[in-house]
Amino acid sequence: MSLNLGLIDYGMGNLHSVEKCLERLGESCRLINDADQLDGIDALILPGVGAFDPAMANLRATGLVPHLLRWGHDNRPLLGICLGLQLLFEHSDEGSDPGLGLLAGRVKRLPSGSGERIPHMGWAPLRHHGNCPLLNSDVPSEWVYFVHSYAAVPTDRNDLKATAAFGDQEVTAVVWKGRLGACQFHPEKSSDAGEQMLRRWLTWLQRGAEPIR
Image (cartoon, rainbow, N blue to C red; front, side, top):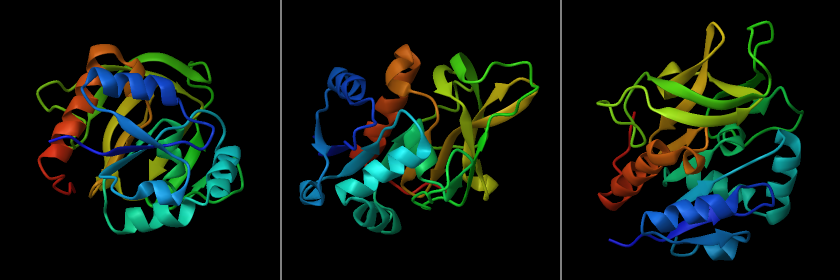
């Protein structure tokens, strides 16, 4: 089944590499920067690179925020990537603007004094904490590519599906609730492991997108 995917374009997303990765997986996507373009879309991808407040300002400028909130509250499929994950939460230490609030929790700066450099940039293995369409329980430690200085702290630990080590601490790598999911790393830049995650997400969509808890 061919999918109608929407890639949200608000001027701060890594659109080209996401598009190219989807093409390699046999899917195309429609760039979405206006509410009228949502018609007929099966699932949305919310990418992001940059800082929290400018991202929310750009997203509001598109007029998409109320439609994204309705999309989330209607439990329709949405995948956040990197900053796109952080925007799904209520607040961020990086700024003063509220996030979308589709997931309860706050985005916090990575802990200093951990012996790790900030930003966290490079490859790290995942540690699974639950099941979701991105993950394969038979491969519990995929190496994926991160670039970030902040990480979400979900209020509901059931929303946390994978973490990555940062010094002697674990930081959020994957969250999932219902049909809403997100990864802090860049699957489109994570070689075969990232492509396989996106392939699993696409297969989940094609099979009816059963909500995950």
